[in-house]
Amino acid sequence: MEEGLLVRKIDWGTVIDHIPAWRADRVLRLIDAEQLAKDPEVSVIVLKNVPSRKYGRKDVIKLYHHHMSRTDAALVKLIYPTVTVNYIRDWKVEKYQPELPDVIEGRVRCPEVTCISNSKRDPVVRRFRVLKEDGYIQCYYCDAIVEFSSIPDLAVA
Ligand SMILES: [Zn+2]
Image (cartoon, rainbow, N blue to C red; front, side):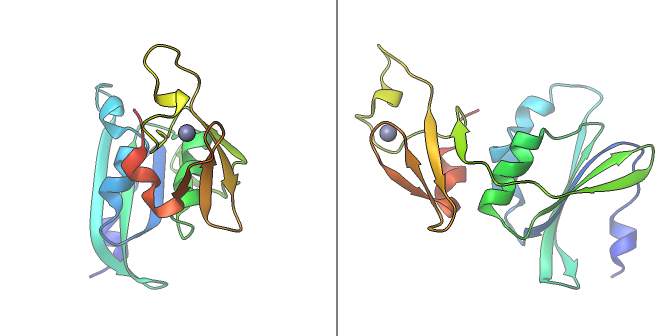
């Protein structure tokens, strides 16, 4: 199958490419794609398990008429380092190399139920340090550790 046939051009939007095969749903959860779907201009096109020259098989997400935020791009890249992000403007492809964040705020829930960031009475901003070399993030308040690969399970909308 030709890659070109599967990936039709769009006038503007975002293409999240080289997602590991069958992981597109986790990426969609991470970027809160359901929220995007409320905008009638936006379409989300998901390709699963398509041929990839580099990785054998891959998933691709196209956000038609939406530019993913750079924070979201960085978050996705953190969990799936193979991912590449292309912003499309006026049919032109602009490759974007997200920088890994040092801190993640508000997007990930602490797995420790007793953590102050999970408290209903005195809520604080959820905050994690990113330990890039070690492959995990650490809660700023209780030091709980979350592996990069488990972040989508704890994503908060
Ligand atoms: Zn915590």
